[in-house]
Image (cartoon, rainbow, N blue to C red; front, side):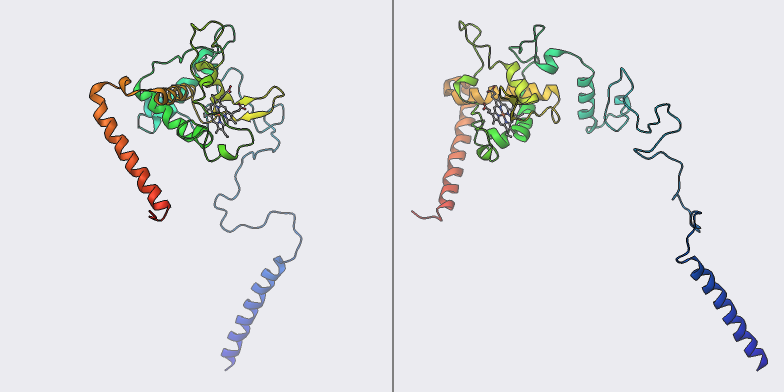
Length: 268
Ligand code: HEC
């Protein structure tokens, strides 16, 4: 009996002591950091953004770019050991950035005038590259056909250019007095850097943030192809290609007729 009682007293004493310890922590003011039983990696020596550095003379932890270097995005990239398909876009961008050619990057000649012709060989692959970028960046306003009837374009504050308007066609250098305005270089510059009115208000944003210079030129090639396609006659198409073209035309007409029937609920 006596034995049992002392056990109970001991248990109570232990419970009381531990409760006292825990309660003692609560609500107390304490300048020392809290006790950590499992520190894991909670506290590390590091400089956080905007904090003061004791290491750099200017006291800034956030460092500016080193003079004479080119910023390259967040990841270290070595084209030699990154050969996968995914790496191609990075490699192209890198190559692009390291080339300081005003004709390619600004679309300007030595006199600061927009260059007349695309400074890359225009191949089918190049035009397709342009089609991809045009459909991503330009079609929302200019429409997939370039006619200015994209969904955003229809609601845009400034009426969007219809790229089939004859004035946007590539100027003929042989036309006296004509043709300095809508050169390939000008179209490139508008696509990359945007369009502003005389008082500096933006009418169209530029898309250089999303396209490399080569993409920008490819878009110009695609716009020229869109323009040519509208003016084209069947005689421009090589005879061997005509049957395939007629077939796809028939399929498109059928598709359009079906859509029209569906839209009118099949009413005759
Ligand atoms: C957000 C809508 C919008 C998008 C997207 C857009 N444009 Fe435009 N673009 C305009 C408007 C608006 C105008 C007409 C401005 C004017 O002439 O008043 C215009 C005009 C142009 C012109 C005629 C320039 C001139 O000097 O008159 C070209 C060329 C052109 N855009 C190319 C492009 C290309 C290339 C892209 C894609 C890289 C693109 N645009 C994307 C709105 C857009």
